[in-house]
Image 1 (cartoon, rainbow, N blue to C red):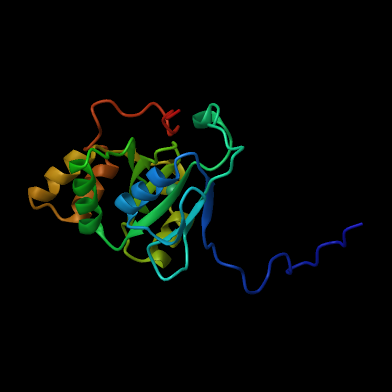
Image 2: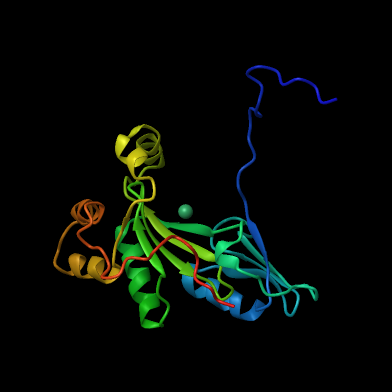
Length: 206
Ligand SMILES: [Fe+2]
């Protein structure tokens, strides 16, 4: 029988940190190129036809991609339980918008965009339909955004957030509006897409 939990000792004093995620893939080379293009991850080790370990920071890898002969295409992935997306964060508004414009020129566009209050976020689907969120913290400070997420009635009343059209964000920046105002307007629904997505479900790729 498992021992009874000790009050106050239900979690470790020093917790391990999130390090990487690993995907089984049918499209190794395409996935490597896509993650490189979208979020600047490059292989630290690349075993062609087998696996690749990618990073875009000081970690030895953040995303691993592995092939296996028994791997099959996912069935009903958008409505199946499991990973919805991984997320990458920019330091601020401008590089986040610049990344959108850069990818748009290559024909890579998000399938949905949400102002969550804590972040403004664009969601892309990788070549196998896994979500990838590209965000920046609207507070510019994890302590402040975490406090707001924890305490604010605004987040509690709408934890998913407000849809926005990224092209309208680009135009607002070109008009000279500061990030704070663009964020406030997005929260108020002023940059809604013409047709907001019906839900946060991933697109069907296969
Ligand atoms: Fe997320």
